[in-house]
Image (cartoon, rainbow, N blue to C red):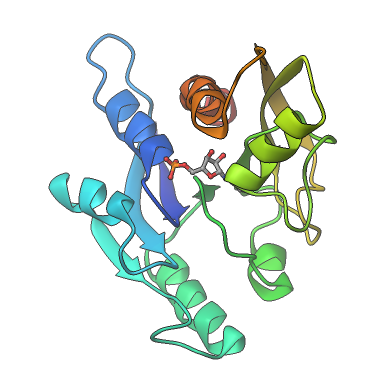
Length: 196
Ligand code: GAR
């Protein structure tokens, strides 16, 4: 069986990337993918270290080294092509992929978002902003969603969702931790499902 060749795109701590790395190494039920490269649009992203610890090739492609968006995409596409990537996972990637990249990989890019789409998604809703809004609006439930990426922001076909409760007195920290915990499960299960 040919394993899917995967590129993981990140921007920060990379705990979702870590969940994938751990699942690949799971002795009883390994996640059958090959993570060929990890790309970050932030130079200091800790996720880059997580990948390097596993001897995975990493790249920084951000405004700092490629100020021009078209050039960033060209560099990214060249890496994806060179590595024969079949699946791109946006695991906490806070950049926006341009149409050039998205159209090259239809139904081959998966994003994880920390809310129950269609709630709290789209422009401006990422990371802690999502949890702030959920708390402010006194939501009783929130969660995470995996979806395919199309040319809109968080508009692609939903693959799976998981819910968690929001408790009275939750802070962005407590809520984001609760959501991250299920993100790790959801992301691994989603990738298992689409890599059978
Ligand atoms: C995660 O909560 C992820 O869902 C979110 O950023 C965090 C990254 O955590 N992504 C978005 O908001 C995308 N719109 P991680 O770096 O520890 O995986």
